[in-house]
Length: 125
Image (cartoon, rainbow, N blue to C red):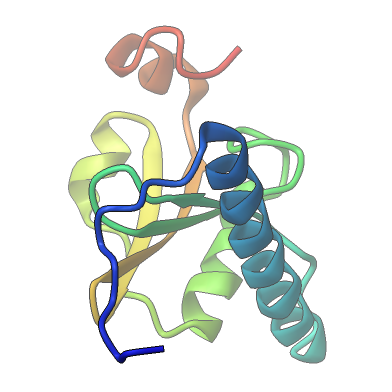
C-alpha cells in the first residue's frame, strides 16, 4: 500500500445499500442500548446520508403512535437535544434537534395528525 487513497471508486448500488443498513443497524442498536440503560423504550432510528448525515429517531410504531410525544421528549432529554421550537406545533409535529460534528441528530413525532396531514399530505397514512 502506497499511502494514497482512491476517491473515484464508487460502490455498486447493492453494496451501498448493504453498508447503509450496517450503519443504520449499528447506530440503532447502540442508541437503544443506551436508552434502555436509562429506562427508555427503544426508538426506530433512520440514517439519511443523501445530502448531509441525518439521524432521526421515531416511536417504533410510527411518528403518530400513541405515547409518542412523551417517549420522544424523554429521548430528547437523554441525548441533550434542543427542545422543539413552537413553530412545529402549528403544523402538528415536534422535533428535538442536536448536532455532532457534521451529523444532525433528531427525535421526531407527530402531535396533531390532522394538522400534520394538512401541512405534509401523504407523509403519514
